[in-house]
Image (cartoon, helix red, strand yellow):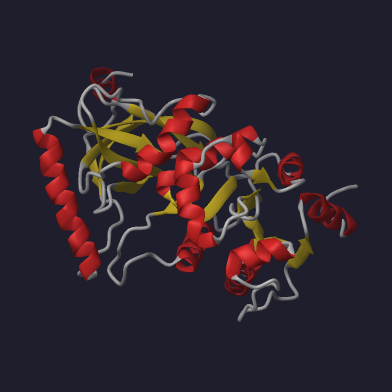
Length: 368
């Protein structure tokens, strides 16, 4: 879709939508990063590098959607859609893994969005991330938003609009829940950045079948993949989920750069915030929460269950093996959690997807 046709079909004038950004004075490491981004940006513009967008999978309700993307610099001649290839284009996906970590972000850039027949203007934050809520009425299902910073670099981003009648949603962790990398957690960033071959990751047995069965039981169920991984690894994770038959759905990742308060963002805080936001955006939804016992998922889900008892359907915890526990946190025993899982809602534990499905059938949550 061209820019001229998009503008011509827009019903209303441009509306400026502020993307979420932190307003307090950043940590000194963040200020150094800002200087680095400014210096690199000037140098790349001097070399005639251009802005490109990496779109992420957005979502919303019938009245509002969340658009997600990242603004980066690209060398002259790089196709505008170099981050927007179909998920089955494996060679493109493989190349993208390390390029995403090596790329230079373009902070605070203006991004135009055409969705339905309305046009919006949003702005990236200091990390180049666009994370904006757009007030727009769309029918349930999959839509495509067109994003651009200048004529000629348009890309499309998938948007899933959850139907109003959806009563159950699924939130799933990724590492050690849907896939096993067999590496210590500190090395996961490197692993996800540079190792992209399908054989380099192992799917957790039975998990794709479990998710597919839950999707059949709840045809309108949205699926969200919530991870502490960086947005840089979005293409690699999306590829893994697609290749192993997991249901399609938005990934809720984070930016690993410095913040107002320190060198890195808190993974548990990211998950707490994401769950709280989902509860607010879909207040009538009851959630199936799936994670593992190697890190903080039990405590995070327990806390969410206590704060939102009417919005949790069940909690499913994958029990890691002793070697996996050792790699996850340095001990062969499951991590001790300060917030134990409550008796309600229903909490089930098993070593893999086959076991969790059997537990759901035993309790009557899923027919045998």
